[in-house]
Structure formats: structure tokens, C-alpha cells
Image (tube, rainbow over all chains, first blue to last red):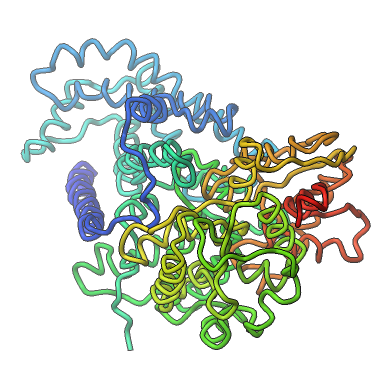
Length: 228
Length: 406
């Protein structure tokens, strides 16, 4: 089982970068193609930068269109990030001080994460105003919910041997794998993460760039038909 | 034979990022007028983006990069094309997109890609290039009839002037009270204005642009721009939001350089004339009027305040607003050339506009787009709810004294 997981981890890691590289090639090939009808787009002014920062870090656009969903989406993304940062202690040796600082916020976020996912699922599936739910999004939400719930279980009830976990993770990263920990929950947790990685949505990378363009466009709209 | 052309060739760098940035959240569906009348998520923005990503993967994905481009399923391509052309391109989805995708631009570009692949346009849309080539307009009506039925004889048209008026094909052939109102108000303002002869005032290119048929655009634009430049025009005034949109946003690109004149919507020109004291609306109108923002005027080029300023200048008028107005206006169903193929959708959307205007107890529904004017009037035929529909300049021209009109 451990050997299969180690092999799977390398395959997933390689496919993640291959996928990223293919996307990057598509972006690169189009890099010279400018927008038509974009003459009035303004430059990224201070106001545009502030608004974009609010879009990226506070999900201001989601708040504008769906405040109920915003609560869940922001909590989910923020807690997901904190949990990821907390997990860095399993990958880094020596562990930097800032990763230690992330342990308590990351722990709290670990509890918020599954709750926020349940809330999003509730809003998406059980409230009448939602007209569309993407099957892929549902799959991803379910997957992250399972991963995070197992994480909580491992922290509270069924603790794996953390030294084994760290040796296993560092072993994979350094190309000298060690046997997988014996905890069944850990093996499940790790396996589900391997399932998640190939499906990670690309909007994580591209949406901030689109958001800044959108703010520039909005700021420049008035200039299309009006004097400066 | 395999079509190895990449699906990304027509897309700008920003648009490729936009396709990747769609989170499939579905917020846009709540604002989509086509969804309001069809309730069919398979023609929704996130579904179109998801399908197009699939097509991109077939020519540019990992497998395609390693082993050569594949072929997307023909049936899926056809379904996608239908969904793409059923859209009114109103841009409400993009306006409410949590990521900020500029959908009013994205859909026409995807349509162009489908045209290149021989899948678009649909139905009568395919006849437009031929009609424009023959008669200068997508309705294939004779150029000799372009002005004659509605241009009052007493309106003075200068040979050359700083101001030019472009009537547009839909106004000239399908919404004549509107263009008649335009020239009456321009005449009342008293500043000389010129027009191209009827056989020279050809299509602005918007119907071709929006259906993805770009081959003739460069020639059409050059013909019009040179025509106005030869008349020493400094400001080109037009009342059709679609014409205004392509003129302001795309004509410079097709012309190859900056235009030698500026583009103004008629409500901009008229509200400015009212401010300068060049025009006064003397007659009172004791009515509640509701103004519908055309998508390509509000979201398209940001002309929102000027039509309201014109309406507020009318003594006695009470101005009402739709629940969705300004940048969030809801399409009346006539946009994106979809009305030519999906007629029933357009009628149903037009009726939703009528329903809301009636529910708000408006005496009159005021429009400022010839396509809206023609389609909403059509939607009202035989419908339970009735309301008086008037174009904004048709209304103003009826409220200025005869002396000012002549």
C-alpha cells in the first residue's frame, strides 16, 4: 500500500506540473494577442489596485453578488490557506519560525474548513435561489470536505505517529521514500489529497489577473464615450 | 479530415485567462435573460465555458501536446454553437461575475471561432453578409428606401458639418419613429448636421461582428469613416447602441488608427444641448415613464446618466426605474442577433420587460435602441399587458414646439 501511494504521489506531482506547463504554453502562445475594443481600458491606478486587492483577499465581488455564499466561500478559502500553511511543518526541515506561528491559526482554521464547506453545500443545494451547481464543484467540495474531516479526526481522536508522517513526507520530497505510517486514516487522507491535486481548479492562478483587468475595465468604461 | 486549428487562435491573452478563471459558480445564471425564459442550464455561461475548455484541451491539452491535436465531438460542437448563438450577448453575466469575466466581449469572439470552423452563424444570420454586400444593410432593403419613409422634408441636412448623424439600418428600416425623432431633435437644436447619402450610409458592421462574420468589417468601416472624414465631421452622432458600441470600441481597430472624429450617442448630444440652452422641452408631460437601459449602451459604453437627464428635462415627467437598471439592466431580448434565430425567446424576454413596466405602474416605456424598440413592440402584439412604447427622441421631438422643430 505504502509503495503504491509513493508511486501515486510521484505520478500526481509530475502530472500537476505537466498540466501547469501545458496551460502555461497556451497562455504564452496567446501573450502577444491584445484585446480589440480595449482602447479605453485604463491603467492600473491606485484605486484599481486597492479594489483588486479587496477582490482577491476579501472576495469583494462575491460579496457584491451573493452575500450568503460569500460567508462560506471566504471562510473556506481563508481556512484552506491557513491549513495548508500549517501543514508545511510536515514538508520543511528545519521548520521556519513563521510556520510555527501558523500552527494555532491553522488549527482553528482546521475546524472552520469543514464547517464552511457544509455551509456552502447547504447554500448551493438547499436554498432556492441557486439555479446552477456544477457537478465538478460538488465533487471538489465533497472531496475537500472528506479530506478536512479526516484531518480533524486525526487531530482529535485517531492521532497518527507524527514522526512517521513527517519522515514519509520528507522522504517523498527528497526522493528517498520511507514506509508509510500505519494509520489508516492518514493513508486515506493522503490518498484523497492525491485525488484532489489533478483536479485543482486553475482559477487559483488566473482569477487575480482577470480581476485586475475587470477593475481596470470598470474604471475605464466611462472613458469609452465621455471626455476625460 | 482533421481540423488541427487551435481553439485559442481568436482569443486574446486576457480571454484565455478568463476561460481558466471561471469558477463555475453559477452566479451569472441569476442574471441571464435567456435563463429567465428557457430555464435551461445547458445554454448557460458556465456550461459554455466548460465545453469550450474541453475543445481547447482537444487541441492544446497535455495529450494533444504530446500526441497531436484531437477532434472534438461534432455533436458537442453543434450543441455549443447553438448555446452560443442563443445568447443575447447582453453581458449581464459578466457584470455579475465574481471573477469579472468580460463576457460581452468573450461570446462574440467564440462565435467568430465557430464561424471559422463552419459551425456558425445560424439560420438567417448567414444571409447577412450577402445582404449587406447587395444593399448595404442586413435587412436587404433598397438603399433608396433608407431615409425616404421617415426623413421629414423640412429637416435641413448640410453638405458638410462638424456634426454628422448616422441613422443605422435597424432604425432606418425597422424603427422609423425613432430615427424621425432623432433628426427632428437635431434640427431643433439648430447646429448644422450632415448625413451620408442613403447609398453610402451602409451597415456599421455590428450584426456581422456580433455573429462572428468578420470578413467584410474592415471595408465597411473604411467606407464609412472615409465618408464622414470627407465631410469634415468632428462628431458622429448615432442613436443605435449597437452601432455606437462598435464605432467607439472597434472601429479604430478595423480602421487601423484613431478615428478622425468622436462618437456620441444621441442622448449625450441632446443632454449637452439642453445644458447649453440650445434645446428646451417646452411641453409638459404629466406621466410616469420608465426607462430601459439598452445593454450595449449602459454596460457596453457607460452611457447611463444622459438619457435620464434628457427625460428629467421634460416638465411634469416622473421617472421610474426598473429593478435592474444602469449597469445591471436586463436585456429586452433583442440583442446579439439571437432574435433572428430564437424569436420565441426574444418575445418572451420582451414580455418580461413589459410586465415589469406595467407592474411599476408606468404610463410609458421609454427605449433608446432600435432593436429594443422593434422587438418589444412586437412582443406586445396580442399580449395581455399593454403599455405605450416610445423612443426617447420620439418622445422629446413631440414635446418641443413646432417653431423649434423647423
